[in-house]
Image 1 (tube, rainbow, N blue to C red):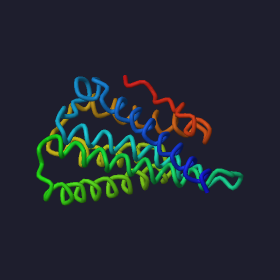
Image 2 (image 1 turned 180 degrees about the vertical axis):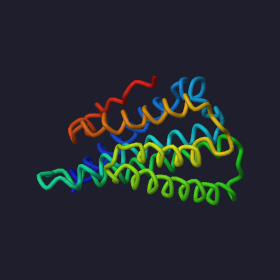
Image 3 (image 1 turned 90 degrees about the vertical axis):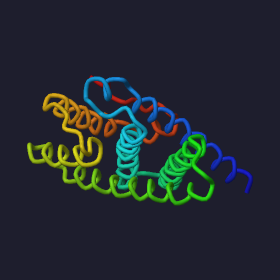
Image 4 (image 1 turned 180 degrees about the horizontal axis):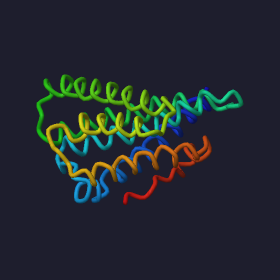
Length: 190
């Protein structure tokens, strides 16, 4: 019984470590300075959601592997990673001075945004079509979810889409062991 709790604790720690890496990646200055993502609470939140979605998509893809003997751990890691995301949202809102009565409602709205965007990104990724249509579909998703009312320069948007495609490929090359040892490597932001 204690082994179960130790295992859960270890996977929670891994989820925290992965989330920290995701946040560090999403805070790379190039997103804001070169690719024109708004350096605001919303812009940062949207980039974190994008990266969490890409990581969760890769973890879910690992679950599809029939030889996978670590499915239970992977499911727990996905769950804990999402819990860390929502706990972080809650903490951030409280630090900004949002009242206790409003925090739950705001986290619910943010969680709905996460699940909606995750679904959109996964549908595009799983279309398994890296053709120009894929790029256009992802372009539309980024304009809607990351840029919102902004109109970035075409070059900035094209570079951002290329980054996302490289990121998908980079994560696809990472194994269960990479995730469980927190050795995931994000592609360079350039």
